[in-house]
Image (cartoon, rainbow over all chains, first blue to last red; front, side, top):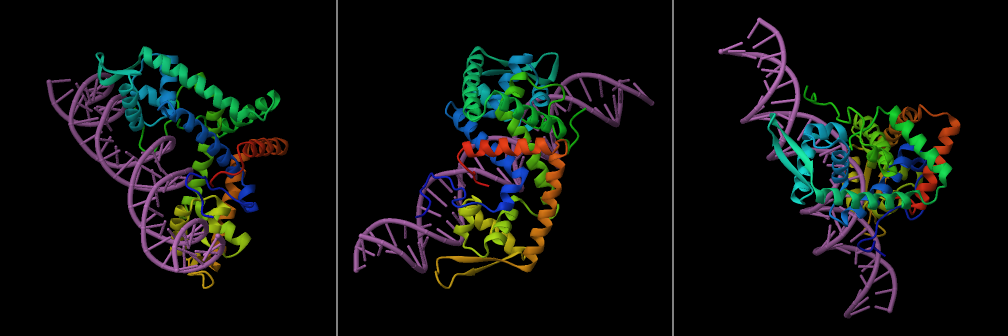
Length: 160
Length: 160
DNA sequence: TCACTAACGTTCGTTGCCCTAACGAATATA
DNA sequence: TATATTCGTTAGGGCAACGAACGTTAGTGA
């Protein structure tokens, strides 16, 4: 039986112990699962991670230049361009030249953007629940603590 | 100061709380750090994750067809083609038609492949140590347990 | 005032990983 | 024998992460 179209692969039997053992792989697997789910859910409303990151940043800090958005989200400036384009195309944000510094654009969230962000927030909260379903409160706290410390150890927050 | 070429971005200040809070993001960040390190280190010897996965599988199960490799590693068959090409080009594996079933190729690890695998093993062990540096034994066990259960909950092992 | 430097937005391109579709050749099954 | 399935392969799309280069604008120091 060939793999039916649309079916993910993944070890049928058991994968080599050497693969299983690597911590990096454990992390990679978890992240793979997680981001698959996130992308699926966000994709259903035509969004992706970058959109959420940018909108959440705009919501929290107010209008900002693209460089500021890049610094705050960790998204590369070149990628901010594209993502902002998409937000603008969707009517979720506006891009205007900064009169005070004509090198810059000022990105502002629109009302539709606000609603969109709320929607994405709900979606991600659901995903979060789904991801953490098997864990009780104590374990969730443990996991957050460990991952938080891990990230700190690895030199702060990475891109996106 | 523009970002010097070659410098990663990443929030200079603090990123929005909303971003920090998402478990998915926590995971994503961790995985991002981890895979960056893995890729860097493997890249130094011209390797990548797929190479290790395939070689480790060949080592553990012996010669196999590409379909078997795909099943065991979770790498898509189309990607197995490319990765095996690279291993063959590097002299780490051989691809021969299977006389018993002429649809198949038999992939065999060479002696150089064995040495290469040992090298990758060492590299990844080092990376593992580096990643887990901030944690004591108890915490490492916790993390492995939690991530393991997480992955199980998410439906077994994902594609590599 | 005139360089020079730095920041900003943008375009273009690359790589890795994930994933799908389709095809010819070979084999298995009905 | 007719049909279905498997295998390797090619081609391609999508997203995230990343770098190089460029024109434009602003600040800084001589």
